[in-house]
Amino acid sequence: MAMYKVMIADDEPLFRYYMRSKLDWSGHGFTICCEAANGREALEEAKQYLPDLALIDISMPYMNGLELAEKLKVNVPGLLIVFVTGHNEFEYAQRAVRLGVHDYLLKPFDQREFDSMMGKVKETLRLRGGFIPSYREAEGNEASLRNNVEQAAQEVFALFNEVSTPSGQGTLPVRHEFHPGTHETLLMALKMRDHEAAMDEIGRTIALFRLQHTGDRFAFTVLMGYVSLCLSHAGEIGMNPESLWKPTASPEQRLREMSSWEEIEDWIAGLYHKVIEYRPDARPSKSYNLFMAAKDYIHRNYSDPELTVDQVASGMYVDSSYLRKVFRKEGAIAVLDYITYTRMKQAKELLAEGNVKLAEIAEKVGYADPNYFSKSFKKHYGMPPSEFEQREIRIRQTGK
Image (cartoon, rainbow, N blue to C red; front, side, top):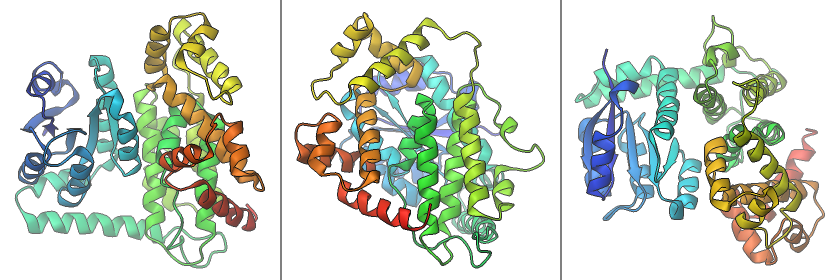
């Protein structure tokens, strides 16, 4: 059986050596096909070897990871990209995920974290099914590769055009204001087992589609992206993704069968609900209980602008370094990032209510400076608070 191919791009020779020789690639069905010490070299290597997966450092000479990722999306169709990054670059990694990068891995990481990430990657490649083999068969043949890409795109668009609007007239909308932070928010909701946040984001996206009245090829891709994200996380936590839908139909086929927006929303929301509610162990561990208690503490204190990791740890009667480890283990997230996530989520809810001054919202969610709050909101959601509020008004006008 052919193995999936991996490219490693990092300007640190010792780290490339560690990635190449100390991690179990073959056990996951992968093999390293090429390495690069900078972004420019990585782009050329990727064009030549056409890897299935690229692990990329964000800070590289000549061309940084974000620039490289954009070029790879164009030059190597179907490539999955994972950023390997340090804590000081975490915000850039979050931006990359919003731009379509598959995942990120925080340095330093161990074999367990590596295995978890590779499980998600392999599941995503598996769910792509028929296109990946034809992609590999086309290696070195530009015309054949282009034909395979176009054929796959046509199949997706054909599936998409068979999904009717609730009125039965036309197809899914051509233009919509897709929320750039939704992918990250949904991933966070899955990791944090935040059912409310997941349902809110799914409902918002469907509501945005309702605003339009003409056909769109993008909606099917967006919705299948949500499904793929959910199934990948299900595989990561040990849940059998095939238990989430009919064994006789693929997720793509299931979505094609939908005849209304309500049915689409209910199905996708149902998938997320099942995954969020899944518990692999009957008895929660001490680590998990501490994680949940710390989350609750943050929810009760996020409005305090002085809230810190040390304060949360003190409230839990544990050392701050231990609390950080627990959050990495149970939620794959830094404590400070979860504090920001909670504040942004609450800010979004306040903006959705309307008629609330920006300064008042900023104060309620723990920001003393409204301007800094606006910048943080835009960084997190990809749009300023004012634009988000106007969009919510349009959504309410649809009768959602």
